[in-house]
Length: 72
Image 1: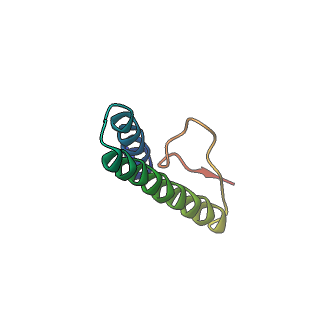
Image 2 (image 1 turned 180 degrees about the vertical axis):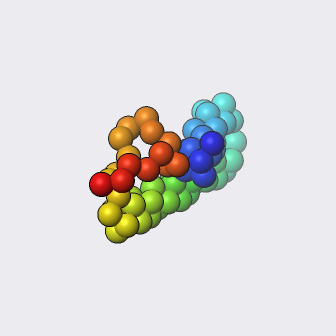
Image 3 (image 1 turned 90 degrees about the horizontal axis):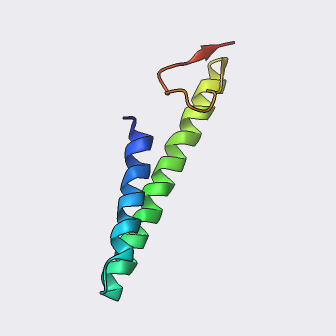
């Protein structure tokens, strides 16, 4: 599992927990955590894309792992 997948999974977990919690403060914190996890994943994904293109490599096709780089 990549770091990006891990962060997205944590975001989903926080959202699931938020749906099942009655305390408003806890719901707010869980949703904020979810947003933070997604932002981190998006940043890493963007950084990976920029680094891949800067090295003359093609972006990955959907469904491929970050270790499966395609050389241009």
